[in-house]
Length: 106
Length: 311
Image 1 (tube, rainbow over the protein chains, first blue to last red):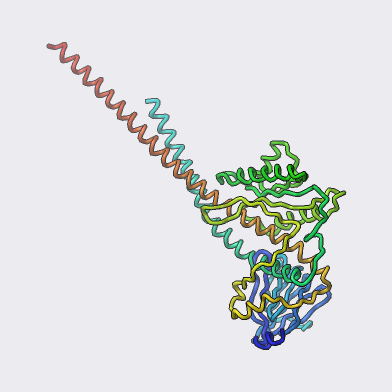
Image 2 (cartoon, rainbow over the protein chains, first blue to last red; image 1 turned 90 degrees about the vertical axis):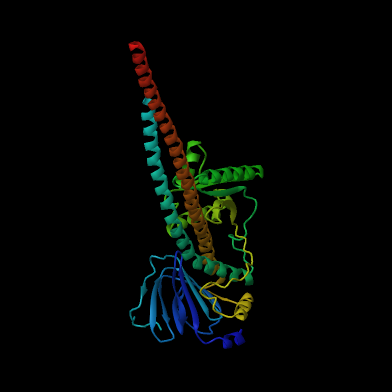
């Protein structure tokens, strides 16, 4: 597992999908997700995890340091070998906001 | 003369029918492109879910009821996906035929099938015959959204999760039409519940396919996941979503098939209308020619008779 993580760059491949359309995909330095037990930050080389998430905001920091925020409904995320998949229920509830949020939970 | 008028009015009405069929055909072909896009858009989510389910199955021994249920309950659910509107050729009737076959097979196997119907045509068929229907859904069979998939999967899941004593079911079959291509659609019976999770071959998604083959190879050996908050809660959240996404997939495929078979049916109908117009026009011409010939013969005959008299 660790050799594999070394071979890839320390970036996360993020793929956010809603039930009826793909929302966003790209690379990121870090991602914050609204896990069911509270916010959870994910950096590259995080251990593989499959987590239930509740409605809230997924925020993604891309390699340029810019922050993207996505409103999501409940769903789950899976992370392994630096690939993060965020699967959420409702497409129409997913709103992409590119404005700079306060960044409180990061 | 009378028959000419009748022929003319038949040609006119066939002509307007032809226009309607042609318009329906064009509408159907424009919907197909839309149905394809919708199906493609839903695919990443379905892939994500089935990946997650497989990841769970690969490392854990699941005893969740969705995967395995006690076998002693003879009640099973059958969901038939039909169309809301007609003019789609044999689409609904092949589904109904296959459903009847399945019901007969289940009956013969000592099960008690409960019928769930989606689509107005199917509902009217069974209502007219006074068959017992457990639940029905109508509307939007040519563009099913997430909402209808959610409604159907919630109803079926609650029927499935209920214990046998409260009228629960032990299996779920779906009869739907698989979209193979524009010309070929095939009716299929799918056993949706309990879930048979098979280790599918790892196909890298279109978005993530940039990685090397070695990465895809390494992907086959799944890492040990940590489940949060707990394995049970993850399963409880993911499995119903898996069912819903599978049902949505079936609905979308059925919608694409419905549109394709409507297009084919309308294409044939347009062709038939044109042939009919051709043969009616020929008949009209022949009968007009016949009446002209008759008039000529009458004129010539009477002129001849007048000439003969004068001699």
